[in-house]
Image 1: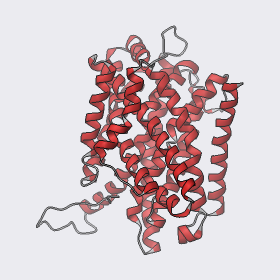
Image 2: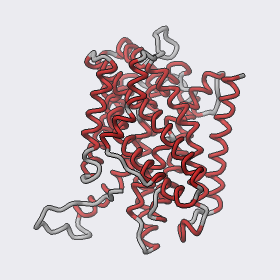
Image 3: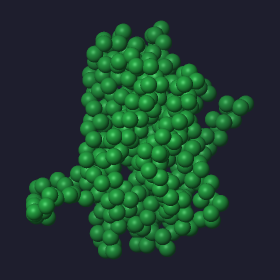
Length: 419
């Protein structure tokens, strides 16, 4: 796994350790990795679930975004700590400590989760290109694949540039929703959405999708890999690296949480209670245009496009970590991109409703969360794996409760859908 470093031109002396450029470089190394992970939390699946939730139920499900965002910080902290403490990523540790049938099962489900992730990213970016330029969905998805592959070429040898591109795309998404919030204003009684509650089975389905769109399984695997290069023999150095990582996580995922909340509130303020259709991203785009003006609809489409391209690139990067870790096998990024783009292209070719496909993909992601979270919690409590950075009992209990809660929500949803 490539490690984050600052490359210097030949003959140029590195900046002194306490100089401003050196401090900025170290801070950016931490923030860059955190923002790469944060992309998973503002992908097109979030657009579909959050905007649909706001349009249908107003601010009712705002508490789901808040709860899921707090859970995301905790989960990503555990993943980062695992990499820093062991010098291994989660898939590698699964391969080293679990029987081969278990490892293969975990790999298969991780790949299925990756396909669901790719579905959301490709469909979202394709819809954005269609809204902006009228490009049909299938050719638009191919354009997305080409652009994301071009960004991915920066990842192995020039990770700092890769991270810079990702940060720029997230800032574009942030700017788009900041403008939309400015135009729409807050919905009535927005604070009531912070009180937990549902409004029937459909709202539970959406809440599960919002959870799956916020706590992303592939981000757990990826973050443990991004931080494994920070392993040091010195326990003090590892603890210092972990503290820096936590600061970066809070910053990056805090921004992602604000973006997610903004999505729901914009839809609640502008579309909830109206007769305007909101069953698809195209409907939401059109509704924003009619209520708030064409410039707001443009901001929405640009943010969706930036989100889809960034998330598509990061998703393929995570896929390399998954395959390499579980199977000790790598395939060229181009080949992996071709393989992972096949399901979303097939769905678009069959004429499936893109927004419904996005929401269902997020539910699939929610079902995949325990398969990443349970091993993460189990390894974290083992001193033979974590050494001095072994998780405390309350951390293990919190992780266990979270895994059980998510699994219980999934089972309840399944019972409601089949009952």
